[in-house]
Length: 206
Image (cartoon, rainbow, N blue to C red; front, side, top):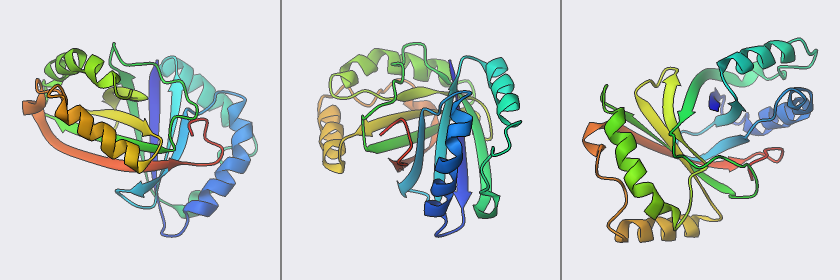
């Protein structure tokens, strides 16, 4: 399984209309394969929408996108709102929980860490050792490394929470355990960023 993460930066004030048009067109695209989630930023870089697509592999992605592009109403008529587009392909860590989109949020925290070249094996080993303890409190819906895209040498972990209060509580309990975050591999981190996302009304992940 791979995940395509598409991040669009929009003109200020355009998010609501962008989601409206995208949601109206989505049933045409859903016939070929569904999104895992469609979100907009609430904290972090503003005026971003993020849609995440699961595929079995790159060949399936190429085939499905080519077939969907033949539809008259796809892609949606939203180009007037878009300032920038970023596409990344994520490969999940071998032990990552499988994402089953549903009502897990509605708060989703997407964290992306850039690391030194060659540091990924240590990072994966550290997460493999410590994730079981973190899973006792809550589970990530997405966890893996960027294989293709402008943010090579980075990995993403995305966490759903039922509220901002739950996020604060869970993170405090995880830190107090002494087993989180993973220590092994942290020496390779160069940059860390996060953003809090809210789902669109038509997103399978809510």
